[in-house]
Image 1 (cartoon, one colour):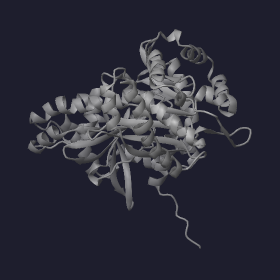
Image 2 (image 1 turned 45 degrees about the vertical axis):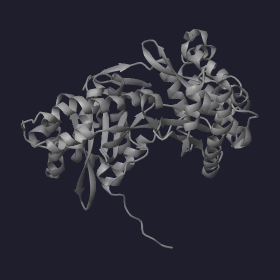
Image 3 (image 1 turned 60 degrees about the vertical axis):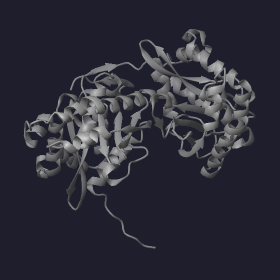
Image 4 (image 1 turned 135 degrees about the horizontal axis):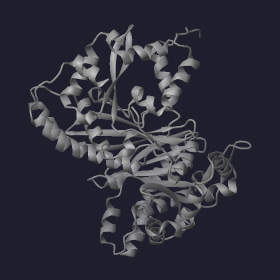
Length: 259
Length: 247
């Protein structure tokens, strides 16, 4: 049967490149069912409500302060070694409509542990609503996607293997929340050292899944990390939610600052 | 942002090598929620308590006695073929402190777990956990091997994986892993063996999710699903009787 060839869109090209490098990583998922009913109750009482992705980003960064392995990346060239960053940088996938389909704009948040939940939330809100021309990461991603594939793959390989530059494009960990859709991937394919995904919220609990690069850390450490994230959610994050915080800066300022 | 480059430690080099080969295998996960409530009750009453990893090692080895596919390995060089072993060899990951960090050391249980008692297997694992690193021959050899340059290590691994007689001596026929004690579970453990058995948290209703990631070139999903059913039966009959006998 004759069908029709469909040209890869810019979005699909970017995803294909992302997966090409993600597939080379021995990624192992670890999951933990977390009790978050106290956080849910506190959130319901907040005047200004932080996003869940901001909450998980900050909680992971708080834990990564004490666990240097979570701030490391495995670089293969010129010889296999690890590279450790002094602080965490979170990479949040923000969905935007672009040329009739959904494009994902990376939002990098430097040192989320040092920022308030509302600052992170405002940055996310801004990235979700700002004109596409203002999102420099999305512009850069689309510009690379227009290049022929050997050039694209070469650029990505250079970025992934340069300790100093990798963090500016990829961050130290990725986060994606599928909870609102009632689903979560069993095993994420991504070039991140750690990639967090959370499932649907049920009965005050959520299944948080951390897919990690096994060359950098081991399963027990990721399991301990998830346990500490639950602890951070129910202590530091909960305390912050209980103190009604006054908005400090606009989303536009926040995103510039965070970039 | 400027950070600092860190040399790969010797245990990390070994893990990276093993994962390098595991990544090239078409591994597929299957899972089954297994009832272990009677085992837990029997263990609570037992004077000498065998480790859960020993229980799963022996349980799976008993299943593999009945199912030859679980004792087979896929060798790709010089031509693709299967190689079958007369008995199982189990591998388990042991966490040990090494040069200021926690390293994961693969440990091979000496002899077929199906032919040993649970306490004998537990004793081997306990020794691997507690004895000084240089007193455990396997760890000593592994750390010495990790000093070799990468291309020498990779070539040696490649040869080991493709020589039927040697493969099981270094990689085993199956692997048991868990992160349950830390309050989590893993859905897709990675190891360059035909079957990697992972068990998760013990749920309140006395059940646990057991996941097996298997090499699809050697056997199919339905066969592996049947092996999980058989594993549950083995745990609740033969292994349960042995634990009750210990008590």
